[in-house]
Length: 54
Image (cartoon, rainbow, N blue to C red):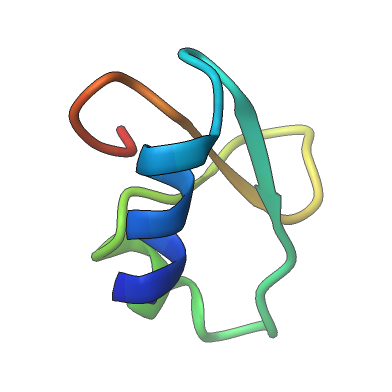
C-alpha cells in the first residue's frame, strides 16, 4: 500500500478519483490508508490531494 500511495502522490493529478474494491470485512485495513466506504456506493475510494490521500 505504501508503494501504491507513493506512486499516486507522485503521478496522479490533484483531486484525482482513485477507486478500490476491497474484500468484505477488509475495509479497516484500507481505512488506515485514507480509503473510506460511502453510503450508496460499492467499494471504497480516496481523492488524491497534493500531500496525501484523504
